[in-house]
Amino acid sequence: MKLITSVDIFVYSFLIDKCGYVLLLGMTIKDIFSDFRAFLIAGSAVIAFSHFVYTLFGVTIPSTVWVFFKEFGAAIIMMSVFIFVIAWVLKAKPHKRPQRYFVVPYDVFGNQSRVEGLRTEFKTHDVAWSFMKHYKKSYPLYNFALVSDIPNSDRKTIFRYI
Image (cartoon, rainbow, N blue to C red; front, side, top):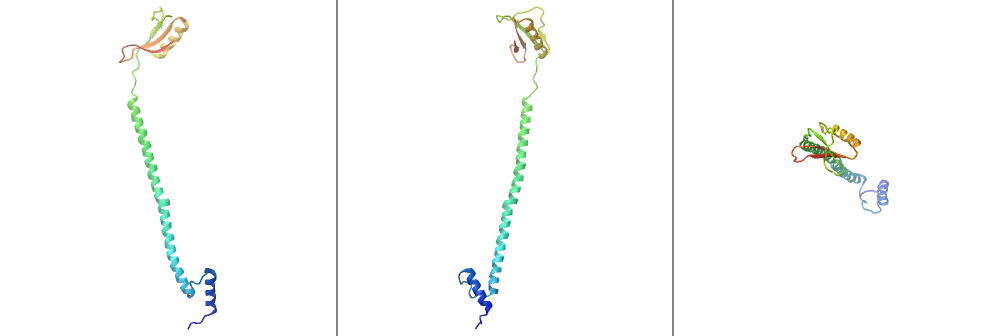
């Protein structure tokens, strides 16, 4: 028969007071700590696994995926820039500018006329435009058109009309 000591009474009363029911009444302190050790090992295993899963899905995989999508986005942007440049180079061919420009005077009725002493043929657009503005100030009753022959066109093209 086992003697009940004051330590056993203290442990029993402690378990009854703290837990609220008498579940562990026949256990000694050594039995309590051996069960606690099992819970401690299982709990630490669960905590370690959850930390591993959290690190894997919270840090490792997102950072790897983020780097991939960042590089993929940069590649998409670079491809679109190159496609735009190639399309622009193919579309923006050098235009053949006219070699000669003409200033054509029109009278107040809108009929093409000829004014003596006017220079009507020019090699550049800017010079022809400048002369045309000067002619408009000198001859206010006439209108003037800046025209030229464009390649692949049957008729003359009017660039400016004042």
